Image (cartoon, rainbow, N blue to C red; front, side):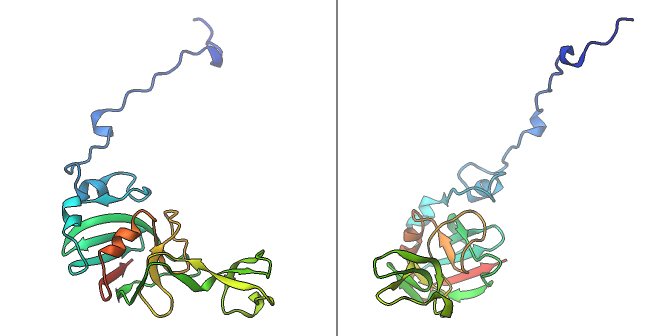
Length: 203
């Protein structure tokens, strides 16, 4: 019987091709919201689903928003139909976004935070890049200023500072309790809602 070959000379073992049963097959019709949600990367994708037919007839009189704190995605709805499904980033552990039923209380296209921002000296140099106001340790020096964080297309949900606006969307909770959305999406959402539009935040 011949001696065994050294490991580096062993013939390579072939990996069998995946069978048809091993390849994911989306059971829903292409282009539907069900198809979009069934995709394996749904919880990680930064893509937005749009049903242009529903979106076209969605307006401030018939719209509502549902935000999932678990999936970090939001739905712009027209009745029971989904017009858009888009990624969001809600409050991180220290600043959780509370689930519940809300109404839009204020809408401002160009909004700056009066709670979070930067403190600059008289020469414009940033002294504190992540300031929380009012706060004794983050005092504004003489001649300096506090510059609130930019929150474009602000849609207030509570008078304690929670709302929806344009911001970074890293696909996980990262905000100070607000609901951030992409700059390519939030202006469209803003145009489809009004004061007192219903916003539901679910776990």
